[in-house]
Image (tube, rainbow over all chains, first blue to last red; front, side):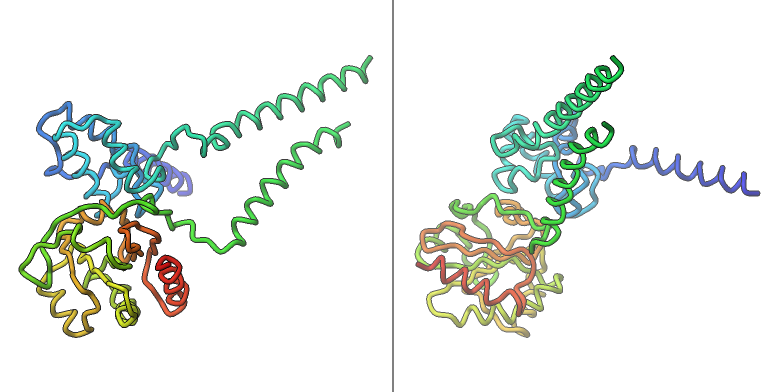
Length: 138
Length: 177
């Protein structure tokens, strides 16, 4: 009984896991006819934060603002905007926060370098400890 | 020896903890995103005006008086609640209030304004949310303070409530100078 129960829970978890990776909110009428342009739009949408839900990209979000932004991105691509121009258009209005991947800038330098600083501190502490324990053994 | 090894990570851990506590204690709303349009000129746009048959041309509306821009809709409940404060602002001297009717039904909005009163000197119709995107709007109601030179000075996300009103009014006075 408990085994069947655990097994069904496991199946549900696995299904949810795979469902999540496959769900996109792009509606059929939003698709561009040109597959190259559509792919470009999808790639941009995956990097744009949904400002209503904040931890989802607009590609996954069902919020109405996310839909508006998806349509807008497709419109801009149709007009001949490059990827960088689309990103600039959006960050000019919503700031860098709209990008899921923070850009490398003066103001984000700490954010990018802090993990390396912590890693170096960790390595230093390990070496230091290793050296001291070696000395003790001698 | 083991104690010595723990000193450094502990210092870092407590430092991180301190930062987290500081962020918890200060008065901030992590959901509120700072506007990218502060200190920038108002976006140019043209649309239909709700109150007249004329076009709403942004170039004609900004740049000579302190202007409050309020994004609202009849389907948004907090907009109804903040309406009395927008009306209160409209009684102030030398302040112009522009409404932007966000993704709404015009007939319903006219009825709504007849019922609650109209504080706006002009209302732009944003039927598909494009004007909202140009202003960096992500959830209405949102209210902007634009100075007499047509520069956006402040943005408030969410309804103007009794608690917020005084602070918002102070921001207007600061930017009137």
